[in-house]
Length: 118
Image 1 (cartoon, helix red, strand yellow):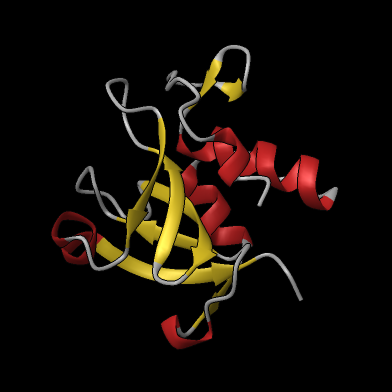
Image 2 (image 1 turned 30 degrees about the horizontal axis):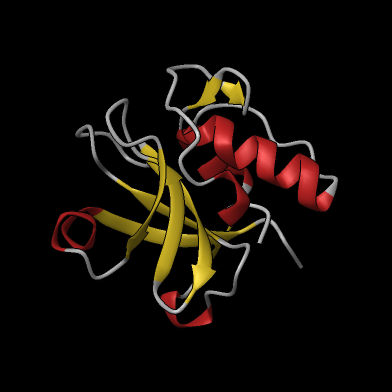
């Protein structure tokens, strides 16, 4: 729910807060710190290394979804919110938004689901 409250926040490369905007890893860091009290830092790739891979069928709200959007493993990350949807800091034009995992663009680039939660 907290991730959904940040919809329409601006995108900012390196951004880590609602006042300045978010990039994808900054959004994940902020959501986990504010909603779960977990400090998560680093790039999407480093968050991928510190989180536990899970099967896509095991996704629960609050889990992470990773994509290869830049030709590099885990170059984009979002927060799964249920019903096949995820919140992410997409790009400077659209900012923080909700997309579906079955959206053609993201479905072709999906790399896996991970969890930071037990």
